[in-house]
Image (cartoon, rainbow, N blue to C red; front, side, top):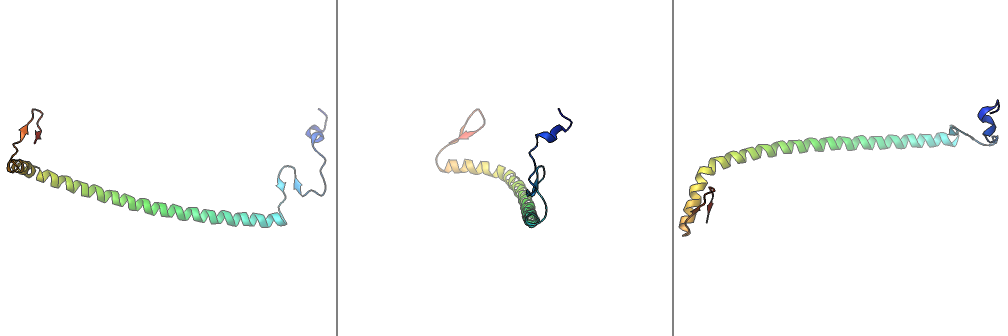
Length: 113
């Protein structure tokens, strides 16, 4: 290696070139306006993301409220079914007797018509 190191492998730089070899286009001129447009676009996208996140949170809260309400209704339904259990069994037997079918009791505990 020579004392110049990496410098001897680079191309000679054109003085008319507006970009450096490492950082790309220099800031200023047209690229400054372009960066302002990108910044405005990024802000618009971020505002939209925030809006969507807020809507998602509101809808998730509404869904959670509905699930809580559903669980309460299901609990009430189970209580009513438990209260009606002793009434349903004789009603089923009476309905079977009226139709002329006698219930058949299976050893497993269920009835069949």
